Image (cartoon, rainbow, N blue to C red; front, side, top):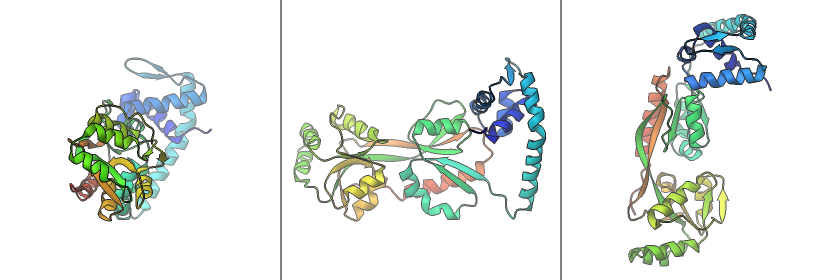
Length: 306
């Protein structure tokens, strides 16, 4: 294991500014992110580098020695960075974005080449995305969940509807009849006997759908657990089985007749989608461009009622 260059940059900022909050402002990351970098560096070196007080971070003897060791190399690196940036034709910012794989695939993937800045996409679970955003590792996240970090803000921009779908070779005569007769309990019993597809990361879709429309937790396990929702759509296409997925992800397959939209529920289950950002960022222009692109894209993937 090697130490991270960002840990040293954060250490230098704390040493020179005297506080975690001032270092965070200088580096354009959150104060928890600064603390994380410092804790990681202290854990790696095995030494306490600062004595923490309410007003100031006072460097220890080991902290002073480390600062003297890294000051000149870091200064040279910063000068080299500025020098080569000046020589480049166009300085490009690098934006890190967290979202689920399917959101990227259906909304942003085709626009990558047209963006005037560098882009790093990270996939993962929403709580981890929120933590990474707060720590300065991400600049923007797309999420249906709001975190509690005080450094973050969330802007609602669209909704996703969780719907029941089936492969187009599935015999849906019985369930359609039960739905027409509003026999909801019988619908639940029927669905429990069918083949089901889900993903390990998105079991919440099935649980929330079942609780919302049937008033209970699903007491069965899906037959097939696949990597992502795109895999569910491909597996169901021209096949047999059921799943619950966000509507925008299955729109194209429904139009092409590969799967069937079975039910949206008596009262549709909808999730509000948010843009999550840090309250202080140096990338306002790039983030606003991404948000506009994604908002416009979302307006074109809304599925019509059957």
